[in-house]
Length: 334
Figure (cartoon, rainbow, N blue to C red):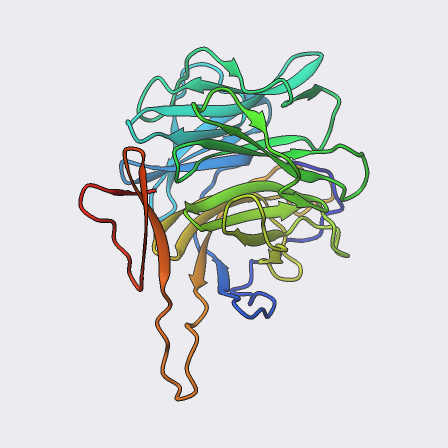
């Protein structure tokens, strides 16, 4: 989400920040990758396609553009067919189909839509469909939008979105909408987060294991937008976000994916060095999660933690418990 804030000279992203101490806290560390992508824009979304990172983002008057970036950080433009809207994001369904979600505007209103991707790389989309009449506000409404569409473990699609029920500094809230078909959405009760957090991106969505990276709206004393991380068991109730970036560093509109277990590649935007500079540079970083250590006994030996999973076969549900529980033959993990 782009806002005009006092900007100071950007300092390179420091290597790591330990989350606030908690009894079951995990250690998140983030560092900036030493690559020069050479691409600009905000509200980015990334997908791993054919061994490259395809990065869609809104780039000023050009609207949504895309580039393919290799692991060395060399990016080349991707030709797009037609207009793709703003705040572009994609959901990949188990049947191989893809659907794009985005914000679009007319002179009176701005609204969230979706449309089927017409090719495997989602370079063009079909006819758009309004996601919900509740995801529609006047064009003049600021600090609204940046939808993040996520495929949930149970096959439903959830959209996280920034809303401003009360206009004021750091009063933005994160709402969510749910859909069984990925097309028609219903608002879920309550708020996922409050207090000026924006630009949400779910980088892990597993049963009992959600990780979200996001930004604030410049609510710290520095008045710069910072990157944060938070976790959830169900994708609805999230813990207090913990700051990832260090003092003197700003970031917004993060997007990313899990490269390997507990290792994430993150793209995000930074404003230029001059006050009011809206020439956002796209950066790349690596986020590492070190899970909390297993509880130990008085003898100092780790006690294995048992987990319970739900397995389903037709209309039959069965719970299985163990250190590494597996579903019986014929059952699938719910």
